[in-house]
Amino acid sequence: MTKRYNDPIEVEVENSQAHLTPSAFTWRGRRYPVAVVLKYWREAGEGWDPQRARDHECFRVEAEGGVYDLRFDRLAGPKAQPWRLARVWD
Image (cartoon, rainbow, N blue to C red; front, side, top):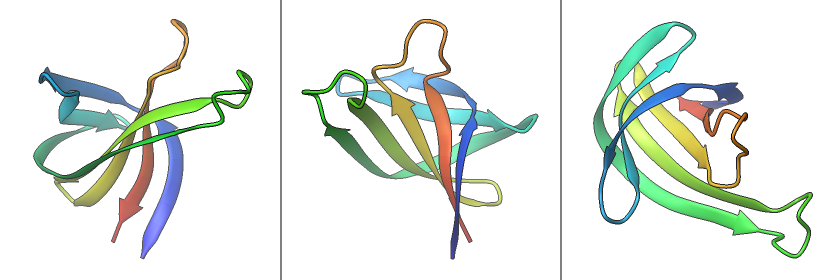
């Protein structure tokens, strides 16, 4: 089972040549160190419509308490929170 969220989170990252790699994230006031990145993928689409365009880097990570999907919005404006918790796996 999974539960979907769209909560803003703070993420600590390691910079690699390919993409940002989360090393820890803070959700609802609690810090979760990332044990391992299980999967990475990118979601992009609707680039022809600036109002609906999306470009996300997604990470499935294992951290304390379970498995989490983190999403980085590459198109987020300077005042927007680019990182979101997208899903928690039971």
